[in-house]
Image (cartoon, rainbow, N blue to C red; front, side, top):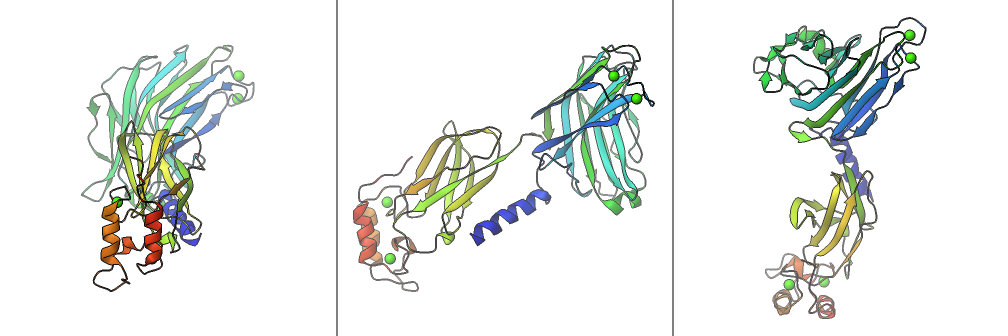
Length: 382
Ligand SMILES: [Ca+2]
Ligand SMILES: [Ca+2]
Ligand SMILES: [Ca+2]
Ligand SMILES: [Ca+2]
């Protein structure tokens, strides 16, 4: 159990940062809430996020300016991920903003919070429905206006590329459709490094129109990509692997695992179980997989049609047949020959073959021969 716990802790530690990919988002409802009785309705269905709000006619209490809703990339779906400034990243998506009506202003687009000694500052990289702009602003981020005209209902591809340049300065490149801004440095770099984090995402803002209960807006962020990959939630597949006819330390047996889709191997991993045989494959993106397990001298077992939808999948258990000394996934005379060649050996002997020590007692004996005989002729899954 200890090894397993350490393994999990190690992986979780990695996912907090150290190159972890954001695999989720968190939506913050009403970061501005001037109309508290509006009807906001947000959808998270990665790689799509939809923010919408209507009945923006005010709530009768000042201020009566606007409501704003935001989302941020996340590793746990709860907290915005605070990414160290030295990490280079690109966040992009196809945005469709619809205003009903187009005036007063509805705006949406890229959003980021950057840590400051007093809390944080914000970037808006937005399109709007009334002035038709595609523009980025917000201290300490550089201002930039694209030579594009945006209309309500248009779909526009927006991206933000953040990186530390070779001159040591933190810079952004804004992208809109096929256009890119120059790489531009943030201001006050000595201040932003003090907190050293940035949380990127997107936002929708709808300005209030008194007397119009139908006043509202919707922003669809589709095909959200992080560093070129569609942003999808990831889950764990876990279960128990029984290594039959084995008395050795199972926590030291490497187990080759494959995730296959449509017969194609999409991921390979070397697993170690805990002392009870429990394993976990972390960060699996939703889909249907055949999961294959092949430790050295056991036959392969494949669990078909493991479907990951929106939760961890447990109970993917296998019990593996021992005796495949030569690793060809069958127990045959070749394995018998390998056992004979190693017979009587212990570690350090010239003819020692750890894969012939089927029962794991550090000696190739009649007990190993018994295991082989019991399973003779068995063939593993393809
Ligand atoms: Ca109000
Ligand atoms: Ca209202
Ligand atoms: Ca074999
Ligand atoms: Ca043995």
